[in-house]
Amino acid sequence: MKKPEKPKKKPVTKFEKAISDDIPELTKVMTRAFDDDSRRFRGKPEGGGPPGYNTGEFLRKWMKEGICHKITIRGTAIGAFIVFIGEDGNNVLGTIFIDPEHQNLGIGTQTIRFIEETYPKARRWKLGTPEWATRNHHFYEKCGYKKIGEERNVEEGFIGFLYEKVMK
Image 1 (cartoon, rainbow, N blue to C red):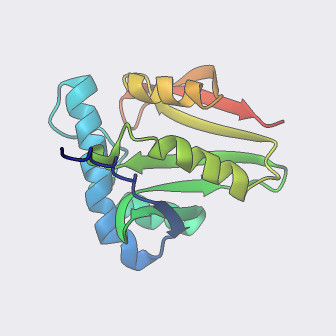
Image 2: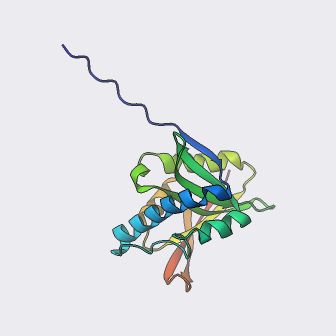
């Protein structure tokens, strides 16, 4: 009689500070992630990200202004996030993206947990996400964020939903 197979272990997700040399690889991942959202939720093959998301310009700019961590599995980048830490404890999650092949595996939740544990002095976290990105809305709400408003993003041509999480 054949022994049942052991369930495969989930690969270990690691977080490490990103550097400018990571931009080409992270741009490819970011492009896949945002274009996948655009196909799923807007019916457009591409263009679901902020300006420069698919050229590296977005990451180049925001990595200078914020703190960027890449998310890796077995040494391969599968996503990243950028945070902006306020002296008053009011922080902003500028972006988070995960390659579509690695979504719905709990990595986003692990990432939010890592962020909150890494910056324990945070009083609150704020973020924005497009109105059409309904999967993001569900994810952020599951992680304890509350929708606090909306704003028209003229540059990108959509309404952004604003979320906030007050830390205990």
